[in-house]
Image 1: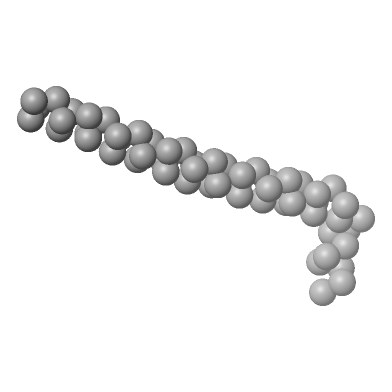
Image 2: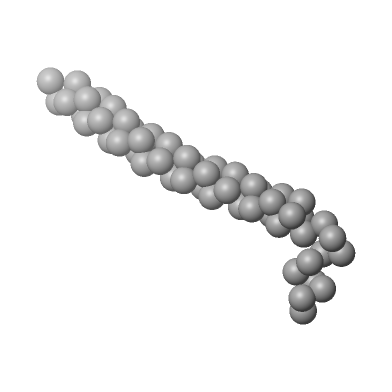
Length: 56
């Protein structure tokens, strides 16, 4: 098991690459969810404005 984690002497490079990829994927997920929340709020505001314009 130790040999697996040592990665034949390339452990620092391999685990750093895995860590960087994980950070990027988590960041993209968070950014996407934040953008989705913002878009939904904007859409709700526009739909309310549109509804008011039709009634008047």
